Length: 87
Length: 357
Image 1 (cartoon, one colour):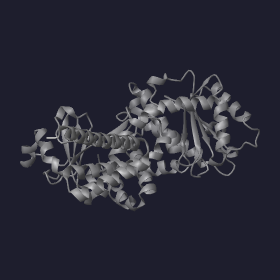
Image 2: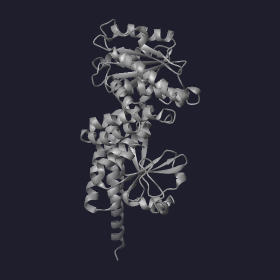
Image 3: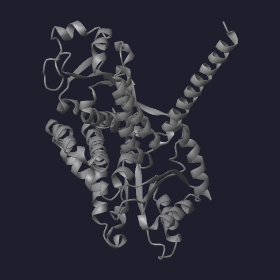
């Protein structure tokens, strides 16, 4: 009986979880330029000021795979899956 | 001009638009809770995008496809991992942002068109687990311990649900992580060993999450690595003794561990023919006298109904609070399935609203 009551309570406790989600932020290929511009880093990327935080490859709009906020600043990761897996 | 006719047409058009909106909202709502409908949603978007070649539709199709596949692989984990860890994944498209809008540690992944969908999916699964596992304790748990746990869970789910992507995941994500930090390989091997008997997600992840929660603002936080290693060693020692007749081989002290932050004990439930439920309840009472705060019940797959009965009988003891009943990937005999439960002693119980579990 106690397990049954626990299950009923648990059902109502877990019910809201069905409607919550883990949001994964993504940027579509053709929106990337717009995104980096809104972040105020487009010119710096075009000037080659940023490097992949893992393999040190120069970041361009073609090889930018992910942007991460860390230690209060933005870090960049290239499209190489090996670098993305280090996130 | 026949205004009556125009008004009637207008009304009819509005009714059709309203009907379509209600229908799609209903389908969308249903697809949030019924996984099978997500496949339909994903198929619908990809077909429409292919025919109309519209960028927004293509984005919808990609997001829907990734969400469907990620949710498909993570759905079973909801019953296995602590409540609130695994929620359905949803893609948020970012088109513009200010640096201050991003939270510390937050990632924006670039997604390429459909031809790179496998890569999109692998990156999506990995990012999802990085975000989902150990909510609120990420920064307390040592990076190699946490990363190996994410990789183990990702590897297992991809191998089970998308075996054709297993090699690609191993060559990219696993290989790179190990090259970066060789200790991850050691943890991966040890986690796999625990996972074969249901103790990885069943007890290990729950224990380190609990320790991380408790030691967040204490000196013990700096010794998390040591604590994790000791728990791993204890569970490894415990499962190495599990044979055909497990209870005969495990020394008395092997059933529990009293650590600086938490104390836990295991109870294996399988044999109703050995005196019924009474011996299990007595053992639970015995753990109370030893001041062990957390009691894990690990029920064998073949004896699931009996294990549930034992759990309900222990739940009647006034000093125990039933925190969770969860499913096991493998039972302690190594069979797929099984049931687990976690009890905490009333003194150790945290108020429900502040509990991480």
